[in-house]
Image 1 (tube, rainbow, N blue to C red):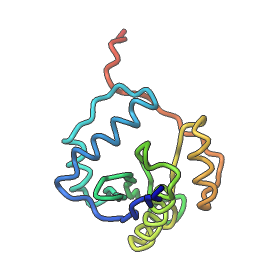
Image 2 (cartoon, rainbow, N blue to C red):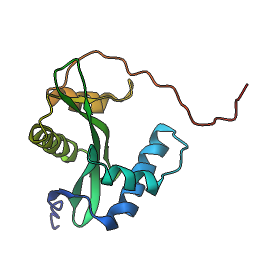
Image 3 (spheres, one colour):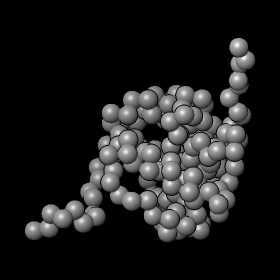
Image 4 (cartoon, rainbow, N blue to C red):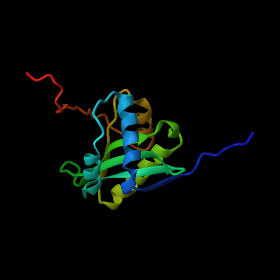
Length: 157
């Protein structure tokens, strides 16, 4: 029996033809967490053209296997900018192969190069694998993320 090694992971900048692969990853995560919002390519374009946000991609065998979206926020509390990780997604077939850790390492490198003084990330309270990954990468804290959905839910008074 032949042992087929997994293709190596390569990190690279986002390219214009990545939109469909990014949409697939976002929609996979939306299904997993029960978010019904449709993927919006306009929002993706806005993120990619903003000087304060972007995406880091992980590619395996020519397939976009994971992504990390971020934005940089100026703050007062920490005496400088925060590099906020908005989403970290790894496609189902590519999980547990070091892609999340590689994206976090690249995000930290980028944050330092942008002069940020901290990295921020949030995750759902029941997403224990993500929490373990973040802790193992040096993240700590007990902050609570609170959200208020502003989309029309059809329950207007």
